[in-house]
Length: 144
Image 1 (tube, rainbow, N blue to C red):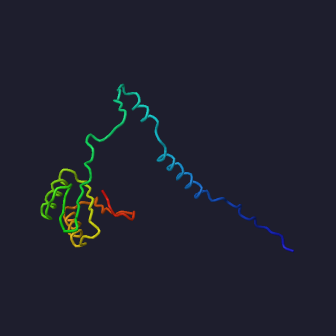
Image 2 (image 1 turned 30 degrees about the vertical axis):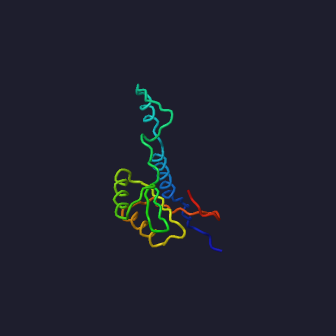
Image 3 (image 1 turned 90 degrees about the vertical axis):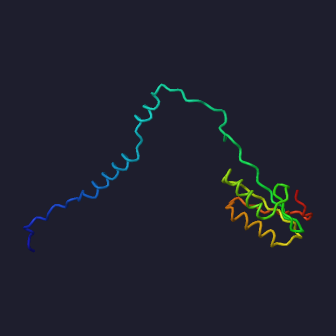
């Protein structure tokens, strides 16, 4: 049996992937860490900020405008009779004053749907996004 005269090379561990991971962890913790010096510098400023009890908007949002469509085709805006052209101009003026104006369309259940659709189309032309249609879930059908 022949004897081995040549020695095998020593096995070596490749450290390159481990060093890559260590560098990535260092970068991750450096980017994700919060430097306390910035917070401390803000606390060191000799300034007393005002305190408020409850912060609210200076003006409250206006109530939603109510458009009623009656059986005979008559249209009222906030209980004032108007035509479609007047409705459009009044809603456009109100929307200029408050961009998020809301409108509730209430049509009599026996009225023609075409008139209600014209009112809804008028609201779309004025670009009112908060548009609601009133319905009744009870058997009575009367909404006040």
